[in-house]
Image (cartoon, rainbow, N blue to C red; front, side, top):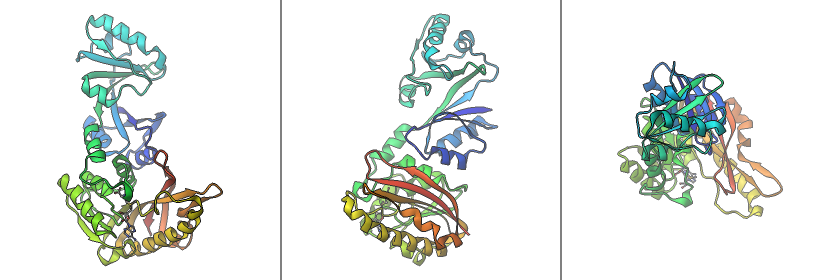
Length: 350
Ligand SMILES: C[S@@+](CC[C@H](N)C(=O)[O-])C[C@H]1O[C@@H](n2cnc3c(N)ncnc32)[C@H](O)[C@@H]1O
């Protein structure tokens, strides 16, 4: 069976998350991926595991892209048909289907992405996509649980903006860059902040552990995890001494301390060496913590003082190459209007 997966346009990690999680997926159009799966259930499970996914449509084999054959499939009062390879022609077929049905209401999409999950759910809309050139018809079979994502983004007991909040979907995509099935494996975030990464990892089925240098942050992580009935082993510790408390870890996924926010441009060049020393200390210590072939997914900040771009990820080009395989780098993510850009790097212990 073939499926098309629609991904969030602002999730710049989508390409890498899909590459790690869906074998053979190909980019059909910007933010739309095509993949095969033997079961509809498996495809939906895959989509619901990803941070980048918005909705999933399944190919309707044997259904012709004609108004009559699509009208036969409309079950709800509302429907919407979007032509993938000729979006502007969509109104005509919607009108024709309405005439065949002699009832119902159609909702036109604003682009080839179709309708938003919020609209689809609220108005119970049967949504179809047509590929005219290849004579294919697709129907939306799954949408992301936007209410749950909003709850995790905005309504957790603690969301401390000063500690740097990672959007939950980005945290999920980072975890999915670890090419490993969760199945109770141990994932640790040594800079856990308010626990965004650990919440997502627990939801995926990892056993989770975390640390932070501030007791208050550890408490916030615990309360946030508790609010969703997850538990974790949490410690107040310096991330460069993670080996004092954790061993035999399968994966470390973390957004470390990125420096004080709102720095003046002239302060940046003094900040960068200190951060690099911290990250180097961590990556050395984590060699004692990780199992052989264990993974690290880590954010390195980049700063621009107007004259020069400082990339803290430069440290992985030195002696660390002897201890870690560099699996991916240059995966960029930044929040709108942020003065720090984030580069995500995936390493594997040698
Ligand atoms: C960017 S925040 C992490 C935010 C987290 N990803 C979240 O979304 O909640 C960095 C965290 O690192 C902690 N921190 C700073 N220096 C540390 C160190 N040397 N060891 C451990 N934690 C440290 C800070 O207290 C802060 O909570």
